[in-house]
Length: 290
Image (tube, rainbow, N blue to C red; front, side, top):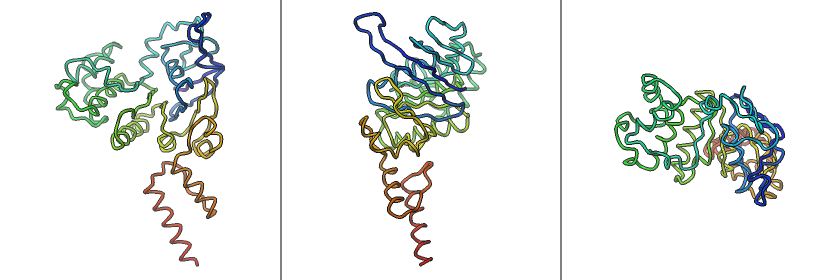
């Protein structure tokens, strides 16, 4: 499903002394199947942006299109429930939203709420459990007896069980240790690829944006500040520093290496280990030629 914002503004408490413009004339387009990172500091409008994606809020001005669904001021879609079945949002600390007595019941809650049959729900649970790195033996246990990382995976499974076409991730690695962050992000990236999802990730991590996203949208004070491919956006040190963002360390190193040695390194999905191997091969090749 494509996502399009056309001159969208959103004002909290409009026409009151406490009015606050959270989004200001925001326009962009996300093609179906993209992995987009939305970056910006607190107050930049990121959270308000993603709340438009399933109709939690509607534009004060402008229009939002999500596939065939449209949201605008004064327009309440008759099929808002169908829209919400297409857009799955994983909020920060999703494990805090668990409440059922067993893992299976928690995962089943979302699809049951959208009218999915019990037989289909059970089929989806069996399909999704290994996708999120959990075992079926946990299904009968209380989610509150699990580790924090397992609880988060249960909450994510509940979102995936609805079978969304758009997956929205709001700071998905918040509160996890470095290993947990990598595991969760690798899991989301695999799901994105295998299920051909349109993925929108709100993040403070420039490293995650560089590694996983194919498009980046940087927000500042409710406006679109920069937009484009990671390789074009993440090397603009001065522009990023102006809104208190840093160039990812691996990108800064690659840029410095290219300037010094005149050799362009492949950008996509680089890890320090892959980068070191490529540099070793380049240096070895130069030495052999000399």
